[in-house]
Length: 176
Image (tube, rainbow, N blue to C red; front, side, top):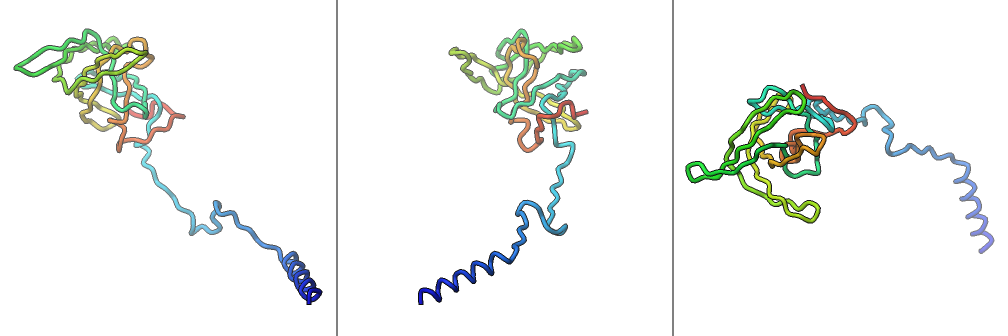
C-alpha cells in the first residue's frame, strides 16, 4: 500500500512539473479594459514654490508651499495691535522684497496664538487676508510674523491648500 501511494505521489509531482503555469503579474493589467485612468486637473497641481497675490498689492510674492504647516504665515514689519470701536485690530506693513512695493494693512484680529520656537514662546496675531492664487480669489487666515530671516515672505499652509490643490514638490511656479 505504501509503495502504491509513493508511486502515485511521484506521478502527481511529475505531472505538475510538466505543466508550465503562466503567471500574470497582478500589478500589470492583462487587458486594455482593466486599465483605469485617473484624471487630475492640471490647474489643481501646484509646486513647492508659487506666486501668490495679496490684493490690493499689485505684485506677487514667492511663497513656500508647506503641507506640514497648519496655518499660513506672512512676513510683516511694524506689527502693532490697537483697539477700534472696542475691537482688537492689527496694523502691519508688507514690503515685497522683489519689487519694493509697500502696503500698510489694518485688519481685525481673528485671534492670537503662542508658538514655541527654540524654547521660547512667541505670540503671533492671526488676521484674515484677501488672497489670489492662480485664478481663484478667496479669504484666508495668516499668522503675522517677522520672517526676514526666511527665504520666502509667505508660507502657504493647509488652511489654504486643503481641498484646493495637490502639491508636487518636484515642480515650482505653476500658477499664473
